[in-house]
Amino acid sequence: MARIVKHSEHPLWMYKAFLLVAAAIWGLGTVVIKSTVDEFPPAWLVGVRFTVAGIILGIVMLPRFRKALDLDHLKKGAILGAFLFLSYWANSTGLTDTTASNSAFLTSLYCVIIPFLGWALRGPRPTRFNIAAALVCVAGVGCVSFAGLSGFSLRFGDLITLLSAFFLSLHVLYTAKYARGRDMTLLTVVQFLVAGVLGFGAGLAFEPMPAFASLGLDTWVSLGYLAVFASCIALLLQNFAVAHVDPAPASLFLATESVFGVTFSVLFLGEILTGPLFAGFALIFAGIVISEYLPLRAEKKRRAAQTLPFEDDPERET
Image 1: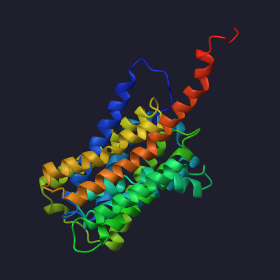
Image 2: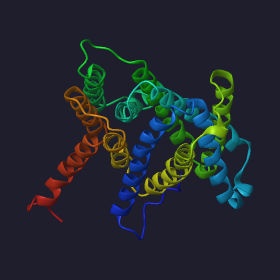
Image 3: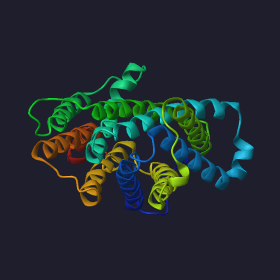
Image 4: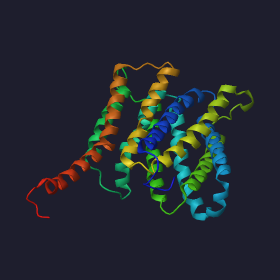
């Protein structure tokens, strides 16, 4: 993660644009994974993706790593890598039994899970906005799961995708915990490599080995996109941007990944938005807005209410 520096010569909108670009890359990445998991087992996909990403980023950042690499970075990076692997393995596995649009929106629930999981890990108590967001998102998940079927059901792929959101929440929380006093770029490389090794290990243990020699060019292009764009570039854009954008609005911009995911699913995979699906997506996105934006707005109003009487009172002595 880039070092937090609030002052910058560049306008704030540029960093927000970086977040949108990262979200768009990840949204398209959901479509790419959906089109790849049929030929490439999920664990092997995670292994190849993050091993390549770790090697590329490691080569680029090699000079600074020689000075900063130590046992502490290796331990913390390994923990983050384990969470990263579990999240992406679950996400890729879920895509074998759900649509790319469902996956994109269900994964976005991590924005609502984080406050409650952080509280369970001795963090701050969830606010009324967190609780309201959770209820709205649960309703949204229900609409997505119903999706016009004759009965209410939750598909295996949807459950696994929700599990992915849980592990992603752990990854975000522990990334924030380990960021202080450490080189986040170095931690990123370590976690990439650890996630890659775990992916290969899980693939050897639980999945058939891909027929690498018979993979088509489109599959290799997809793997390259996931490693270079969806891992290295998108992560660096995010980390550079959050050094200048406050966390709450930054999370909201990143949450648009789900919107991009559905948009690209409709454009490239021919998926159709039914009424219940559309309602579920709208509710889940509304939950994200409640969780990330409304608290910031309420805080601004509170501060304005505290300063307004002193600024507008003509009888106040100077």
